[in-house]
Image 1 (cartoon, rainbow, N blue to C red):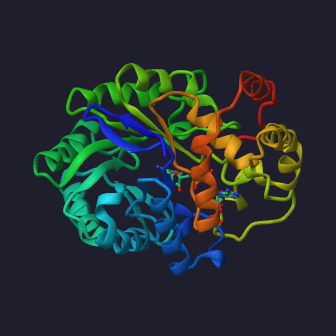
Image 2: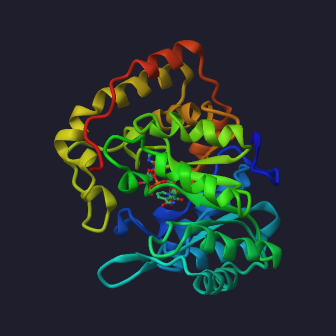
Length: 330
Ligand SMILES: NC(=O)c1ccc[n+]([C@@H]2O[C@H](COP(=O)([O-])OP(=O)(O)OC[C@H]3O[C@@H](n4cnc5c(N)ncnc54)[C@H](OP(=O)(O)O)[C@@H]3O)[C@@H](O)[C@H]2O)c1
């Protein structure tokens, strides 16, 4: 697989990563299987995917434990990015960016992952009660201690931080400018896909101009862009799509022209809609690395093959002309 180099410390990864979240969090629980997930992670490494994106809160903890079983055998094949800073409670998920907590969380992740170093340690969400410099300073100390190779910032909560008239990532970029004074950011994780393009306005250029990698989360639009979901199919209660406004029967039906467009492009290449969606994300910059999430080996292999798909100017024009998505998160 094509390799991409990201971040101030020139980290090299396979161009398409693997989002490990669906194995233990946010998606259809009844389809989860430990052995199936293990097969999926091994399949990813076999086809040249290296970046495995996990977090201590996925499960919580069980996703890191599973990745640890793989790393114990194949540490050299993998590039592990995990996250700290969100605690799963009985009722709510709360942020914790206190320095002492961050350091304890890192030690616990290292134990679960069965490794002595994390390739990229990401802050899952900034803690509104703690200045970002303090949290980031503690994370920088983990680099000095040799427990972490580089640091990443998740900008997924940007919608919630947005002020009405401001750009989606204005607050994020101000936070990034502040933490860059403390320690270099190697990658930023943000939602980027054919139907969620806000990151391209200001965030992607900010990353490109500073040599920061952009990890594209939800590159398949939570599965919608693969064209395998049917309007009105329904989702299990703990599935994030059960509460996502774009996944009501009405909105899924209204957004079918986007899938139809991806299918038309895919047809010209003998590819799938999911592969076209991923090739489009990859083409947004040499610093962009999509991390499609899946727990199925078959889909992981199919997604990795998108790294070989070269879209034509005609394809890009057709995708650019697709209607914008109907329905938003808020
Ligand atoms: N930092 C953060 O706060 C944050 C937030 C969200 C996501 N992320 C990261 O970004 C990764 C990707 O996001 P995501 O997993 O939410 O969304 P996604 O990659 O857009 O979509 C995942 C969904 O697509 C399905 N899928 C995957 N490949 C497919 C294929 N070839 N054909 C049909 N369906 C396919 C998966 O099904 P199966 O699961 O059944 O395989 C899953 O339901 C996550 O796994 C996580 O690592 C981070």
